[in-house]
Image 1 (spheres, helix red, strand yellow):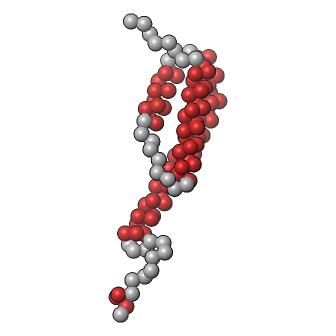
Image 2: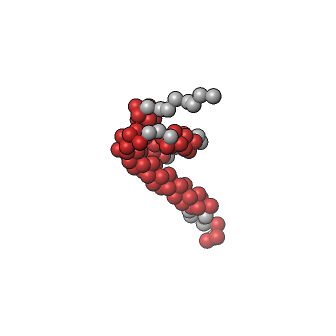
Image 3: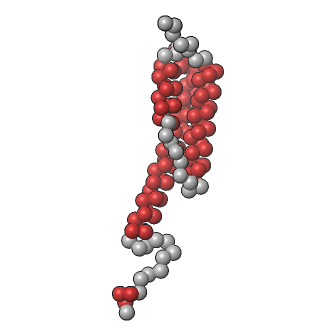
Length: 111
């Protein structure tokens, strides 16, 4: 059985760019208050990392700047996800306690 061909540095760079674009697009959607679907993203990242681990040292070294940039993008996405989650939880809590933004106080008890 033959071993699959190893990805070239250019292929890794292209995939890094694609992943970074996905992170940015997801952050943009979150900023707009839209829901995002992250299913499969972890598998793509794991697959990329596993293949990269099997590449030669020169390829790994050459990809360090791109990997550093991708890490920054991923950290920014994480921060945006946390902010979106916090906003959602505050909104849900406010609704549960009848303090939703724009809600009128209930005067039934004051009469």
